[in-house]
Length: 258
Image 1: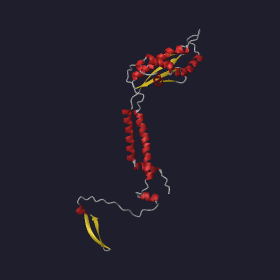
Image 2 (image 1 turned 60 degrees about the vertical axis):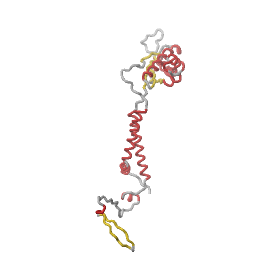
Image 3 (image 1 turned 180 degrees about the vertical axis):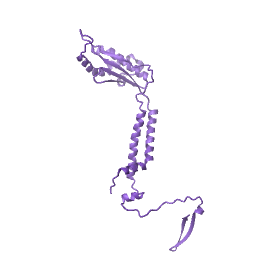
Image 4 (image 1 turned 45 degrees about the horizontal axis):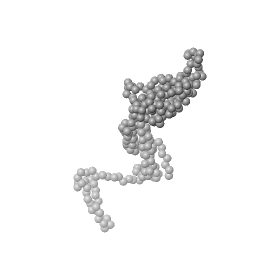
């Protein structure tokens, strides 16, 4: 016979195994916190910003707004993003800064370039275990890119808005510092897993333990029950009386507690 569980049955199952659920959640959350704090190395990020600005046409006022020029610069951004991550730029960076000890491929993998839609601003970012090293690398790539753009495209429409601060006034914050997020995720996932385990154990447990189980599964009333009695008297000799009873030619010992 298939038994359909109601809401109170789910609550009963969770309440029945609440300590197991609590233990699993606490252990998993603590493990995630300890792993995030002691095992994950902090990674720092340094960024620079570049603007692709319009150039003034011959005989035109610098105050005139040329929308075609702006749109052309916006389309150039996608091209510039690809040019930055090419050996034409990275090889010069590697040659000019041997102290980095990074190859062209290492630099290409390390530099990330992004831009906000419909803006002329590009952001270059470098992540490293040392903030100072990340700032030096991203500044070097930015400077070389600005110097090489006139040679590659025969235009001078790239301006550096800001370089990475090599000596920030505040302590840099790691970009992978996700201690709270990892603990919260571990809490939620472990809670769901623990509840699933509790329901699975309840499903696999087909034993009958209470009168309610008898009525639910067998649909029969309980006529009687045998209670488990524990003798808690300190003095066994005073607590138990032994009587001999003869029945059917056999002798048996019956122990009766006070």
